[in-house]
Length: 190
Ligand SMILES: [Zn+2]
Image 1: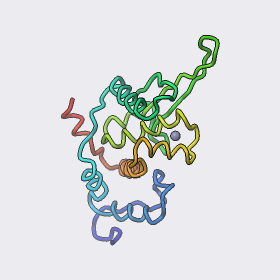
Image 2: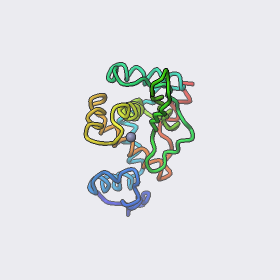
Image 3: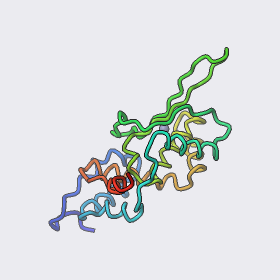
Image 4: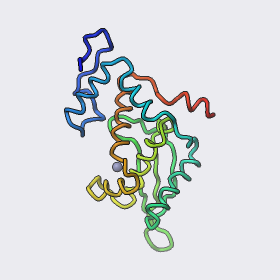
């Protein structure tokens, strides 16, 4: 595939892909080729994920998360709070946050778990939201991003790694001044 040189948009250099650092150079080159085409990456994402999810509020997000937890992590500690957080800027790495604040409760130590999801996840396909919620839920069991952690993620969502890659492609698209792809659906639904 030709990289630019056909009068189309000039693709960014491959080293300028902070969201794709964990992937192979070969994959990054494919992204460069896609971005060199008019609407290449955006069209691919829209084709794969035509619709935005309908989880609009913190309350709905809490229910969405609780349903996944009770299905896969019934015995893990309770999640006290789940919110969309507009203060989490999806810069470089933070997509969501899981915090466990220890406090004394009835004479023993209990952790209060909170999950914060970057507000930009209000306007993405359900698959991307599920991926990030599954990720934060897995931290109830595993603090680090180790093998057991990713096994747990895949247990909750078998396509976890595919969705993560596609989400990172979307973030790469946005970082290179691409328009949001699922905003129109949001406007229609509200
Ligand atoms: Zn994590």
